Structures are given as C-alpha cells and as structure tokens.
Amino acid sequence: MDHETCHHLLSSLSGYVDQDLGPEICAEIERHLAGCENCRIVIDTLRKTIDLYQVTAPETKMPDDVRQRLYARLELEDYGK
Amino acid sequence: MSNPQLASDEFSLAALRARDKSEFARLVEAYSGVIYRLVVKMLGNPQDAEDALQETFLKAFRGLPNFDGRSSLSTWLYRIATNEALMMLRKRKVQFVSIDEPLDTDEVEQEPLEIVDWCCLPETELLSAEARRHLDQAIESLSPNLRVVFLLRDIEGLSTQETAQVLNLSETAVKTRLSRARLVLREQLSGYYGNVARREAAQGD
Image (cartoon, rainbow over all chains, first blue to last red; front, side, top):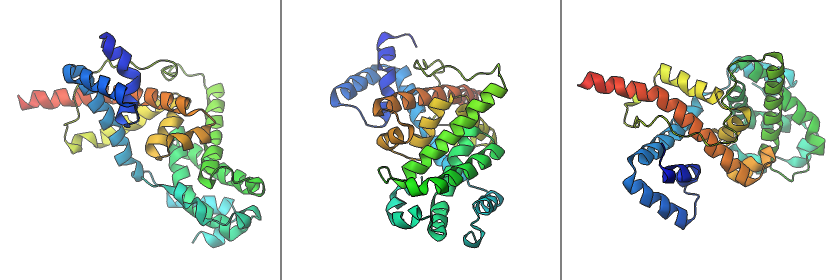
C-alpha cells in the first residue's frame, strides 16, 4: 500500500468502522473507497477481524475448578454452590 | 457480549464497604467470569490467569472499605485486574528476555501489507480449530498496552470513556491504541486467512 491517500486515511479507518467520525472525514473516506479496491478490502477485513473476535469471545469461560478455587481462596465456599 | 457494567447499581455499596460476605459473594459471582476472560486473554496462560483472578478479588475485598464510588464497581474491578495482569507481564519480561518481542507497533500504524479479501470464506474455515489458534496467537503478538485496550473495547464491550477510566488514559489515546491494535490483528489474520483463501481458490479451479 503506497498510495498517499490510503496512507493518510489509515489511522481513521478504525473510527470509520465504529461510525465515530465527523461527516467530513467520513465523506472523504467514502469518496476514496469508491475508487480504491485495496482500501475496500482493508476495511472489510478489518470489520471481519473485529467480528470474529466478538463472535468467539463468549466461548472463553471460567472452568468450574478455577471457580471453586477462587471461592475457596476468598473464603466464600458457603456462597459458591 | 456480556455487559456487566450495567449491574453496578444492583449492589449495596454500604454492605460492600462493610465487607459483608454475602454481598461480596454476589459481586464475585457477577464479575469473576468476565475478569477471568480478560486476564486469560491478557496473559495467554491459564495458570497465570487463575493467579491474577484470585489476586484481583483479594485486592478488591481488601480495598472495598476505601472504594469511593467515583467510578463504577466494574470500572474499579477492571482497573485492579488490568494492573495485576500488566504487572505479571512486566515480571515475566524481566525473567525471560525473549527474542520474539511483540512487534513494536505502539507508536506507528501497521501498514496493510496483506491485501487479500478473505471475508467470504465459509464459517467452517473462519472458525476452524486452526483458525482459533491464529486468533489467539494474533492477540499475543500485540504489545500489552495495545492488547489491553483491544480486549476492553472489542472483547468486553466497554465504551471508549470507560476504557479510558480503567486505564487512566485520555479517550484519544484509547482510540489511537485501539486503531493500532486492530490493524495489527487484521494484518496477522490476513496472513493466515489469505493463504486459506488462496488454497480454496486453487481447489475451485
């Protein structure tokens, strides 16, 4: 990626994905995206990256034995049933 | 995504400050799952994560009488947990001088080098066991300062403002670090998924 505009817009892409930018910079990004396939791919894969982490996040659960040892360490065994 | 910060109002601060055990047990019940997820992803190691989890709630219990209520309970717990995890990572760094230092991307934007459209890969490829390992490895490749911002914002679903409060950073700094973290992750995943997409395309010919 060596295009000057691509480089200039790079630090705004994350805010663009979050819809957290002012209308002017949004319009500038959209004008650029209309003619730049590479930046469209970067935006799409950036969105997908965030999405994959969010989809898989709930799968990380505290194991039961970890929970039991936590309650024991905190002397809360009577409440951890 | 769970959003436990909403639950802060449901606790009696008076009972917690008095270290009422049953109220503290409710707090542990409500937050231990999300704190565990945060520290296990911060530390990348279940044993260290368990130590950090226990330390977080021990420190919280000791600190409760002085909890001033200026931040929400969840912000306060996240702050104790992130401090604990960052401290463990610093200790680990002193013990093991690694040649595989995380890419030093704290100060610059990761330029996209891998430009492959892998978004349309089937779910079986995007979420295969091998892909999940790459998702975890990509997080571990982030420097701790970027990793913690990504986890709080994109995994735990905290707002920019809450993340700034947890980490004692400006909101601008949170946004900058989140941007850098996401670009590094995108680059790492594109390396892996790009190869998968090319393989799929070759098979389709």
